[in-house]
Amino acid sequence: EEYTYDVVVVGAGGAGFSAAIEAAEQGYSVTIIEKMPVTGGNTLISGGEMNAPGNWVQEKLGIDGDSTDIYYEDTMEGGNNEGNPELVRLMADSALASAEWLKDEVNVEFLDDQLFQFGGHSFQRALIPVGHTGQELIDKMEAKAAELGIDIYTETEAQSLLTTDEAVSGVVATNHDQEVTFNAAQGVILTTGGFGSNVEMRTEANEEYDDRYGTTNSPGATGDGIIMAQEVGATVDNLEHIQTYPVSNPKTGEISLLADSRFDGATLINQEGERFVEELERRDVISKAIIDQTGGYAYQVWDQTLGEETGTLEAHQRELEQLQEQDLIYVADTLEEGAEYWDIPVEQFMETIEKINAYAESGEDPDFNHRKGLASIKDAPFYFQKAAPSVHHTMGGLVINEHAEVLNESGEPIKNLYAAGELTGVIQGANRLGGNAITDIITFGRIAGKRIGHH
Ligand code: ADP
Image (cartoon, rainbow, N blue to C red; front, top):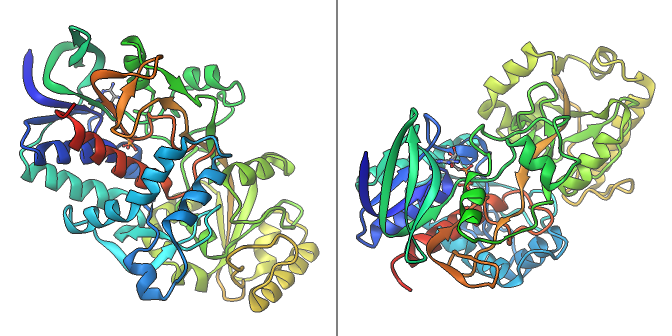
């Protein structure tokens, strides 16, 4: 089989939809090919939160003082200053416009009275989509794509790129072992996501991340776009930087969104009943701290009031039930009972709780300097969730420029080849801060979709 479009987008996650929508808005015929039976990728299963300094919810909540400069600094520092400064600046400067585009053009609904402050950020600046997951983003982008007449082929896996006279001119894909050729008159946009689900590629990049680690990723995140682009001369960077998500399911590797109450002051406690890290530290720092505790896990502990106030109990009720079935969370009527259930020494644990409640009251945390302020743990029932780190995000990948053009080893664009999203490797540096993936993928997805056809 053979099809011809102006633009072929590979991968139906957040970056792919953003790119496809913008390319279609230019008047081009556009298709997205997706290897899984369903669209959405990691974007779908993520929390979907998006950093945007100066956003309308900050304004409504009276959060003053945030700026694109501070966001830029947080992101650069969060990535150990290994991100490309021009591209991080571009992401920071575009963040609010990207969020407004989702809200106004794609009709994504964000909560209007709540924000998250992820680890490493100086402000509460992450917008939260209704439902607290990426489902809202994907649903609305898919609806917009349908409205624009974008064709989506699922169970269609890109295998390699076609080139004509040194310009990328299409994609060879397979659908149930059948070869399908997609010609692309204006070019190809690669948005296949990272490689967190590809253990071999992971270990080759950094031997630490072998199969001892689970992954929070969708099974489609196997680095295909990085490999296909390298075959036509693309260069890569930062592949060794692989991020674990600290609070994941120790049995399945899945991310815990139920535990998002951490961003509003829930506490991490070890087997000895003590705190051991600032709960709003960077993901790499918390992950390493957890791995260093007895058993390589921790307990996140919070109370009913925090679960209700943050909306996490309601939004992630299914996860709560699953964790109960897997014996990974215990909902206790008293704090002592919860500690006993997990064999945590009760006396030490109660001492820790007393301190937490005092710190929650004073707003100061002399032990670990919690930057937002701890929440008190007072109102039954109490949640004791067992958690461990899991491979979550691959920072490295293709080198792109400010037009989302894929660069070769001499730093020149490969003609008619674009990339955006987790498969690019120059924005998040050594470590991506929470809420920055959505800002990155929407911003650079849009840039790719607007740039294609103009060079
Ligand atoms: P991003 O956050 O960068 O948008 P996602 O993980 O959300 O990345 O989306 C990437 C999508 O690309 C996933 O749905 C994944 O299944 C898809 N994908 C990965 N490799 C291929 C491939 N070879 N052909 C088609 N789709 C692919």
